[in-house]
Length: 313
Ligand code: ADP
Ligand code: MG
Image 1: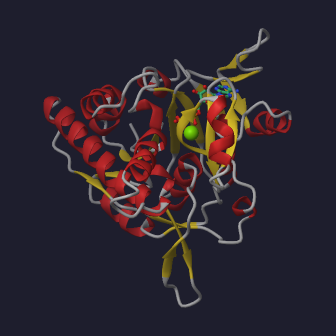
Image 2: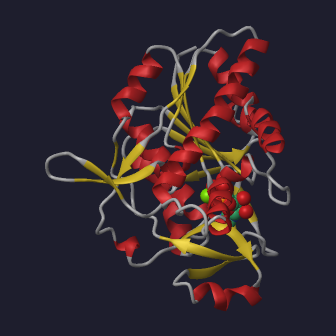
């Protein structure tokens, strides 16, 4: 069997489950549950890079910012992303290490705090669409808007703050990540989409107040390290059109052209499925072979072609 390079993107909601408090114990438990498929890939000798969302975890930091505002200065979004890369990287690395030990697989796991280059003039800076932080009741919305926040309804879920989500252009640590997987390590990278930074003409870096979509960042990283596959693990088993409508239709396979057609019909919302489909198509257009979108539970089955939505050229 040929060894592949696989980028696996874990959804933020996979680790703090919707409707739970998100205690550290729950997060460890969910992380453990999420990693079964990854242990299998590592055991088979594939080079694996894990990426992860941080929506709920960054939301916790944003609540802390508000609650502690009188005592400590609030952290900007970039520092919150770096914090969650460290804390979630620690949880994922420890859970994966323990799972590998149990299977008798000796393999190092390392987390890379990752910076991702964006254009500070990206059009999204003026038109924020990325949901961050907790859900609010409709009654709270006017008061939050008065703070200068932009609030939008996440269809079927509730009201949330939205922030800019510029396109990722480069991954600062890409060569390090490639060297680490070539050296036989499992790497956790671009957590939360990476810390957004801009690059000056002399090459120096500085933070940008925004967040980067983790699926887009994962797809870019996958191309930059010449990955064969991108596996996006999220809250649904497959991709649908007419999602949550009576004429809902689920797909086992989709081509890039079909994705584009349904994208043009607004079948995939900007804050959730939209960036996954875009990321999938971008990865394939830039030379990637295949993308699978599925749930944690079906990750192993999807690798064998028995679950999920497979997207190819
Ligand atoms: P993650 O944390 O994994 O990034 P998101 O909530 O951002 O998860 O996006 C995945 C969610 O998008 C799914 O769990 C599902 O509720 C929603 N979704 C929206 N449109 C669709 C669609 N057309 N097909 C499948 N799921 C969809
Ligand atoms: Mg998402």
